[in-house]
Image (cartoon, rainbow, N blue to C red; front, side, top):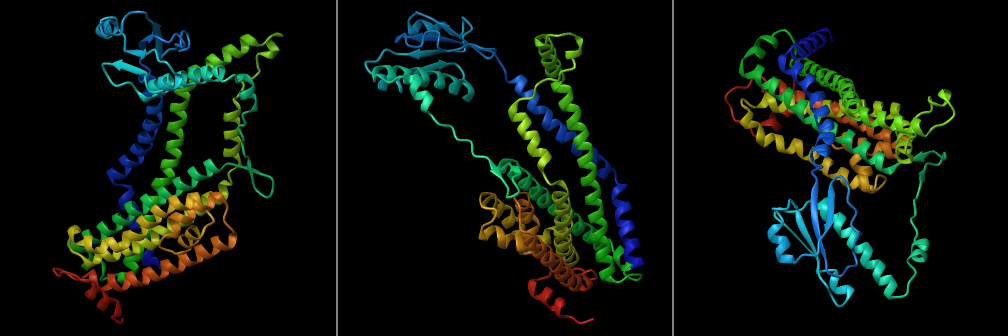
Length: 438
């Protein structure tokens, strides 16, 4: 056991001291912060002002298109050809042409917007919305229908979800949380499993392993390398979580600070009654308040414990197989034939998670969350929706058994393959190595 601990220490310290580890640990949160801030930057940069000339021959849409900071509508009485020819000269983005028709039904497909560049979907949707609204209003009048009464009887149902303890839940938030957890595990298994495989191949091809193997058993060497790299991955993940939270908080405060200050000034201006009322807080919108309630209602201990368990369990199960592949080949090009059978269950689990989100309690979700090769991803997707404890216990127990089995299987291959050089290994050869006795 002391020898395994020494190997774990060696693998851990050797990797966390690498410049690449430090760079990626710092760069990862910065990239996340960059992506987060790009939402604000793109939103601001994308707000280019457009002026659209409206030629309305029906006179049904006069002053119906509302201008704002993005789009201005100018109503014109010139001829269509004249407007199109002078569009660029007058600084118009385009010309919205609404022709005269005998019937309103014909107008639905007769409207044209002329522009030098293709208008964005946002511009088109806003124009389409205004057109549909006014055409519908005209149809209501023609049919003798009171639009106000029609709007009054329209129904907008908002179905709330609660658990059996009357605790409010959110399917959308649970979907995002579960899918994000499964995706992170999927990526980390690939990244750090491949790291184990490359590390084994490097030691094998450089013949360093011949020196190491004289002091420790092959199984001890394999376990030490697997656990050491696991701790490296866990360390990097926890650092990413902390640093990402700091970066995202800073970016959010930096971009939203002015808007919050403006809201506070406006709120204070509306308050009367002296200085003691100035301390009133800025009102939070119902959507923001409800979202914060859902965020606070998440069972973080269960989510965190489940993530750590399936993160480590999935990694340990697959990294043993990756280590076996690395010991059986001499170059990375030779790994392709052995990588496919190992990665297929992972890819299948990722694809199945889409179906699991739609039906977290179905047969597909159950079996994929129980089988050890797919459970780390699929069960992580299911847990935010609520999974019976006996299913979680069964899944975790089988995952431990699966790890023990794959470790035993990989150890048999590793013991022989780590000292095998210059030979193309086949599946038949691997089967022979597994059958070898100590």
